Length: 159
Image (tube, rainbow, N blue to C red; front, side):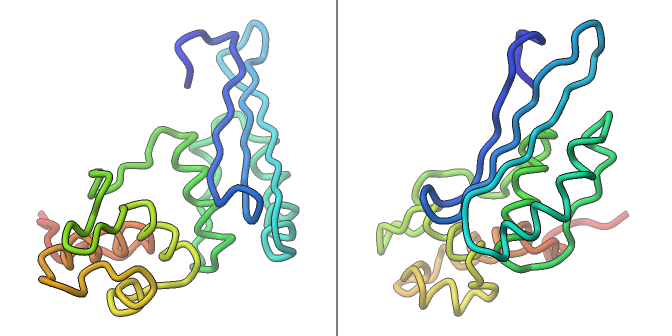
């Protein structure tokens, strides 16, 4: 949350003018809690999802108690990203601005493709050109896919 607990904070994700989610956290006076307000702009699928989730989000005392959407539709992926960002738990495995140096493909372009339905490395490559030249960024594309779609990373060490 913000450094000043009395200051409202807004989290947003999506594609401006097409699919946008906003979550405003307004502090409750005299409490360490926030009042949450979830809004959306976008296609019917997104608006319907927000209508289903609004009560869960806006009535919670602790945002970490709200379950994350488990589906892989563009709307569910955006809502999951928004909730994780508001919780401070959105930790992408690849954070450089440019993901594919051969084709000059921005990481954000790859993330947008995944959010819109490119759920395999091959689809990400077709939609963005990432990993279509030397292929050295393929592992980064795969790690972003795994993170975004809740797949266990093949490089993770299990105890």
